[in-house]
Length: 81
Image 1 (cartoon, rainbow, N blue to C red):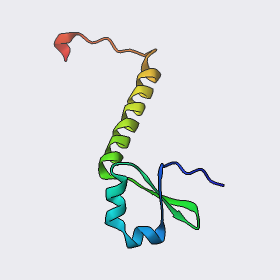
Image 2: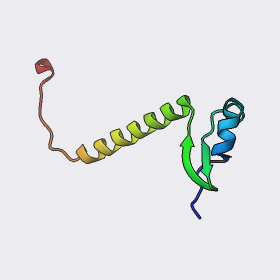
Image 3: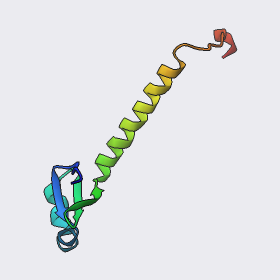
């Protein structure tokens, strides 16, 4: 059985029937949309998606800082900037 990575689940059929009500009930939480009791897709609010993308960008920035932490470094005088 596949893990469901959301606390709110709904079937494809139910989502088609009650789209607006389901979004309202889920608030800002991810929704696992099930097809034959298996997660088919995850539905995220725009705000949740934007936070996720921002978090991923922060992780990428942190990775670059770690990679570049040991150099090589370029010496530059302040007046050259």
